[in-house]
Length: 209
Image (cartoon, rainbow, N blue to C red):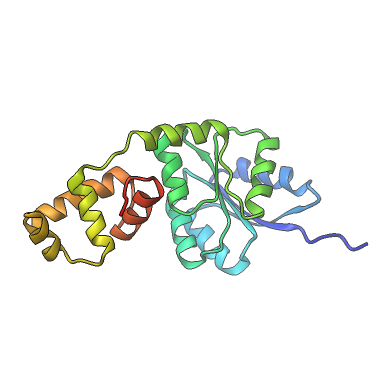
């Protein structure tokens, strides 16, 4: 019987010993093979283009480009990329930023091999991997976020395709007022633009029509 193809991994870490340890540990698994190793974020971006790995493991703290930004750039170019961010800080905002950037999973520092393998295989199946403690932190973070009525109304009108000038007229705000509210909304939701703000607000039940 022919053996199933191994999952091809790209491991990204700027510490030599960590890279060597990952290669040793993962290459012992029958269903995994380390196809490439990158020592920096820039190196990871180049290798991803040439290797197109099944799974990319990225250290969240790299010396040149942070792991979240590397993730964001890869996902923008390759929407089907399956990325697992490792060694992420356990603050809720860091976890949120990792998932918002497009990572399918994230793991804390010093994670044991068993959990790492579980995460890799789950992400390989196209499923999100968030440990129970991380999920709890995210839930607590999201429960603290709320939109004022003016902020919610601005998002509703943006979703309807209205311009800042029209929104300002409808709500009795100057254009600068709309921009100020929008900046606060983006900060609250931790998103980079208006489109994501509308999407995230709907997902969290903060915006209804």
